[in-house]
Length: 197
Image (cartoon, rainbow, N blue to C red; front, side):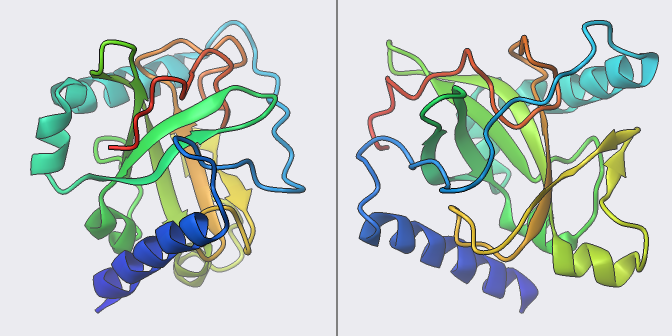
């Protein structure tokens, strides 16, 4: 039942983006939401290195997007881009993993791709996402979740994705981000080659 509700919310968010006049090929930036990258230390801690390695090891098979699709991931939100901070890329979401409410470094709820000029999709990272209401109910008074010491970012509702408030952690495991491995936006990711598939 919960998975049906989430799938329906994701589908409604896509309809909302279309009805809101989203630019072809990209989802517009959320009004009023800061896209300024959070400064990250240049030197990664051992825990950060370990998290990147775990995510790389557990997502390597998804370099072929067909493997991700075979495991229940599908493209939602088009190619997410911002006017001044780069992009987030194409989010392939696994609704059953979102519905589980479980944060596991080896099972990201989302795998992220960048559309390339030759038409193929390049795996660039993963995104861990949990609905705030689910997390807060299961972990009262604990605040935002953490994964191997990395604090999740909070997105309030309403948001550009049409989702209830959620916590998220991007892990740029396959494309180095000069602003840090765990920030939301990647200045070197582009949606320019997105064709709307």
